[in-house]
Length: 513
Image (cartoon, rainbow, N blue to C red; front, side, top):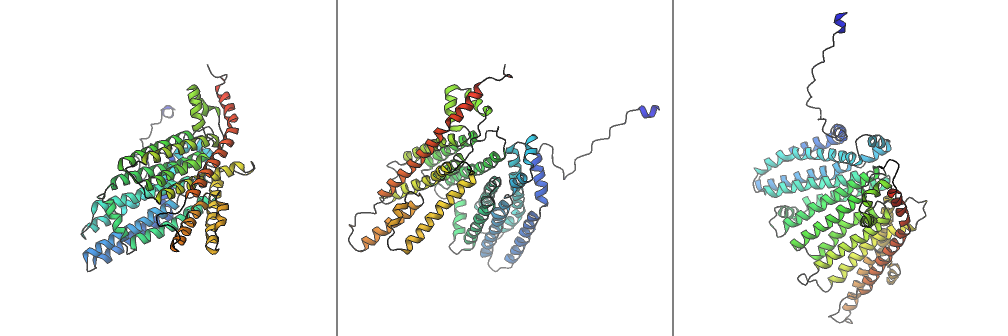
């Protein structure tokens, strides 16, 4: 009786096994790593990469020329590694979030301490960690490559790191897009891009034009402004990767979580940082404009397609600053009405950066200035028109990000069809009737250029004149202004909904002191 009353001794703690993860690591990351490292896709890629590189290295040892053997080994190492981490690994993120949404497990995860960002980051870090394992696995082959001689060690290691960063970027894009329900955007679009990327990798490594050697030379950072160009590329990669992950997090997050304000603020900061880098490095204007447009395009597309689901808890942090906070909320509240104003702010900032960069110390050729304007205006109109069409569509139609991309694809396909028809007919003046479609303005650019040179060839045009692109520039300005004003009118009509939520947020509840 006395023996049973004695307290049972607590067993000693079991030491952690080597295959167990620390409790400090995110549970989502642990789950994804356990499943990912056991997946057949990763195992096959890992073993195939090792086998192929071993065979290539053994065959290169028996070659007669050590110099040619070393170059061949470097080319093949980067080729197979690029295929593995730039194509295969990112494609594994296609179903990352969609599988959780389809299995109805997102709501259960959100009920725990796992927020939307931790879920998305766990998916992304898991795949990137496996890519890092592939990077570690091929390092011994680069060490053996060093003994063949004539190796630019710093440049090749730098290129290896850039490929890994590119893999992390593409993985972030596929993971972010995996939250979209449409299989065309979530699956088919990354697959098509991967096919083109694979062809580009093959042409870059095995083409006789020495493009791979030029890439190695750039990675050595010996050329003028190559360091600044690399820094700008890293800033762009970080911004695009973060934007893609933020898109995925916002799609699976509860309505009470505000992901839009921080995303828009970081977009403004990224544009400002890139503008500073471009000014210090004296980037050419013909490169500054398109790159700025690439920075702004994802933010504009997301801002114009966000559903208006504003709740009082989201408004309260803004209302603490009074009128100034309400004014800031008109640009940074979640939802497409404030997204329209944010788009205008982003366009104004980009225009200011470009105009400030256009100083007399950076002259342009006579024929380049109108082309630059047409490129920028046509691209901007291509981003604005799908957003306006979505607002005109009936309310029954789902106005999601996928519909925006579908309308964008239809506009581009229309311009391609118009270009094909214009090549088959003698008189292509019908394109002016379709000039309100922004991508068609690029076709008009080629048409005006072709008409000028055909006339000049006959000797009837003065040699000092150039193609008259002014009508296309005027149409580009008019369409951009009209499309944005249409979006602004639609947004202003919905501001009363924002004011109602602000009034509800300003009303003290019974729980307030």
